[in-house]
Amino acid sequence: QVQLVESGGGLAQAGDSVRLSCAHFGPTFNMYHMGWFRQPPGKGREFVAAITWNGDNTAYSDSVKGRFTISRDNNMKAVYLQMNSLKFEDTAVYYCAADWAGDGTSWYPRNENQYDFWGPGTQVTVSS
Image 1: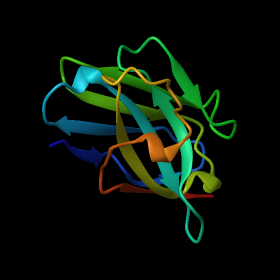
Image 2 (image 1 turned 180 degrees about the horizontal axis):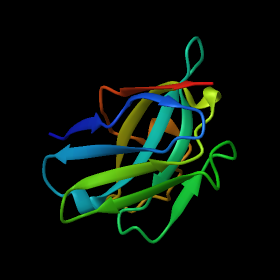
Image 3 (image 1 turned 60 degrees about the horizontal axis):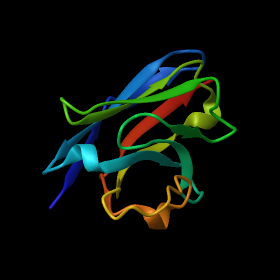
Image 4 (image 1 turned 180 degrees about the vertical axis):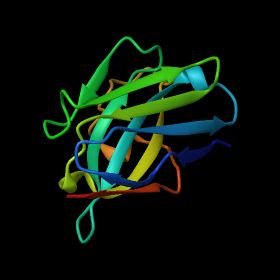
């Protein structure tokens, strides 16, 4: 079984930078594509960024492209989301998710139904 635990959230001001971390507890972290999603207040969950199991490919939503960077460290069994130039509208609960890559299926990073495991989320609040 896999457990994911996010950290690094909190209160920030517009323009600040914050780095989120997601620790993976369980076997074979390097066989999972990893993604970040977020849920703004009163809205549904939305895709933010994703990275393939080997780190060769990344994907971003249009709203964060150029400001956020996803990365992973397979030795540390962690995935990160570097968030720069934060905006008020980035306020949300941020979730880390793992998508098993061992079945050889195509990578659909924006489809949350592809993901097998989810963390409990970490709140990021950006004041304007």
